[in-house]
Structure formats: structure tokens, C-alpha cells
Length: 370
Ligand code: SMG
Ligand code: MG
Image 1: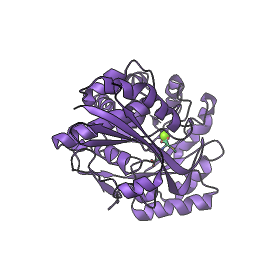
Image 2 (image 1 turned 135 degrees about the horizontal axis):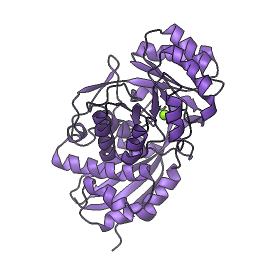
Image 3 (image 1 turned 90 degrees about the vertical axis):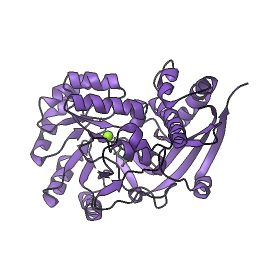
Image 4 (image 1 turned 135 degrees about the vertical axis):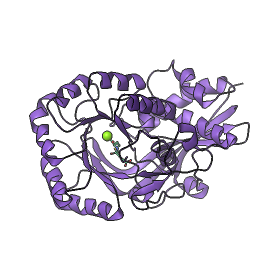
């Protein structure tokens, strides 16, 4: 498949409610979209999950766009005939930038699969036609507001609740939610907000029967997570630390994690995600699909990934309405706590081009240098 060029778009979508984590509050989602334009006349689409600022990971929207324009896109365009399976190898000389690389690989994969008439789910190895949905709940202004928000999600049918925590917002909110919903699958995510010497404090979460605690320590402190795992009965799940297959393999080897949150953007794409999934299955670890406040474009591919057999826990793959009043694809609607895996070729969703145009604030093209 010959890639003629890439179109990059920065779009801005307001969130239906602010989303606060230990690293800040999001009021809107700025997204970099990648369109792979091919000589076959089929376009492939993908979403780069970098955020506006480098606060969840070192990547950020303007930086991802820059590295794509300057290095990644020219390399792929110079390669001529490129299949998605070759993208990671071609981009390997450029270090890091997994989210930017993932977006390019995914856009090419979408075009390739559309051309071949194969859905993302079939290609990746999905075994389910629908997936269980969880929801990630931000840090609230107070416990009453949190209970109110959680209650709307419980009523909507979500099958698992994840609470964002940080020092000063942990034991009390978790206790209140656990008391209100004693049987609800519940987990917490600290986004690196604690330190090794918080082990005794964090062990107090053990009494709340949590599925897991996600990324309590710094992303580089994998050994610290292994030490913490010995002091807590709540399973540790790594998110930010798992940036590749190798990172997953090593974290598993030292027992720093017994569950992994797989985010394709964080690990460089869906192909690497499948490798990590397979590694976890071989090692008896459960995985679940994380979320980065994706639009329908990124969500469609995530939902397909979450349909693989090792994804045995509900993911942060919520319905479109949890994020946006209007999405750029047909919305993902949750029925009985589940989303349906798209079956049409490629990512399997249609883009609303009029709406997309209206929310695009930057657009540029990367074309082959002759
Ligand atoms: O997509 O529902 C979603 C967000 C899930 O909590 C979520 N993501 O650390 O797992 C995480 C965060 C990262 C993004 S927060 C803006
Ligand atoms: Mg997380």
C-alpha cells in the first residue's frame, strides 16, 4: 500500500464534565488526528492519544505533531510501499514518541484493513462481539459530589468503577463509595501520586476489596512497585510504566505488576499491544484496556482490542456520552453495561466530516518529497 501523504488535524472537543486527576483538570480534549492518504484511494484514520500538556506522559499534542512532521512521516513516505506491520521497524531509529508512532501505524492499518475488507477486531484476534465497560471517575470537589457522579454511572449500567486518588483524596472517598455499593467491582488509579514510604498508608486500602491499585508510584520506579506489592494485598496494576513489550516483560519478572492496563498509544500501537496481551496471557496476568478520553476514532480501535480473550477485566472503554455531547463518529452507546465491537472493515466507524471540520483548529499535510 503506497502512502501518498498524511493529513494532521488538531481538534478541540469540550468534555461533558471536567476530569480531575492528580496531574491536573481537563475541561476539553484536544486531539491530534492522523489521516493516511493512499494511492488506492482509501483513507486510514487514527487518533494520537497525547494530551495538550506533557503531564500524563512526556508526549503532548504539539510535540507529537512536530515529531511526525519532522521525522516520522517523511521516513514512512520515503519507504514507498508500507504495511502496518513494517511501521514500528521503520520508525525504530527514532526513540520514544510511542503515541505519535502508534497513531501513524494505526492510520496505515486502518487504510490497509479497509482495502482488504477486514475489521480491526478480526485482524487483532478478537473473540468477543461486545465488551464490558468500566468508567474512570475523576477527583471530585467533595464526597457528596463524588457519590452523585458515581451513582449516575451505576444507574447507566457501568460494570466497574475506577476512582482517581491522590494524597488527601483516597481512604475517605474509597470508603464512601464502597459503603454505598458493596458489591460493585471497584479499583483506584493514583497516576504516580505516591512514594515508596506511603506503603503503610496505601495498605489501608486493602480493606475495601479493590480489584487493583493502578500506578501508585513514579513511572520509573518499577522496583518500588515490586516492593509495594509485597506490602499490600490489593493487586498492583501498572499503567504509565508499561511503555513497551520489554517494560511489561521486566515488570512481570520482578513481580511489580500482576495486572496490566494496556493502552495502545502508550506502547506504540495495536501490534505491540497484542504482543503484551499475549505475554500476559502466557504469564497468567489479567489485562484490561485503558482509556485516554478518546473520540470515536480511537475508541473504535480500543473496543476491538478489548475483545481479545485476555482482556478479562472491564476497561476504561466507556460510552461516548460519558465524554462528549457530540462525537466525531457515530456515538458508542452502552447497552447493559457493554459496547458492541465494530465489524465493518478497518476501525469500522464513519466520521462526521461536517462536525470534524467545525472543531478543527489546525490542519496540515505531510507529503512525499520528490
Ligand atoms: O478514557 O475514560 C477515559 C479516561 C481513563 O483514567 C483514565 N485515563 O491514567 O488511566 C489513566 C488516565 C489517563 C488520562 S487522564 C486525562
Ligand atoms: Mg491510569
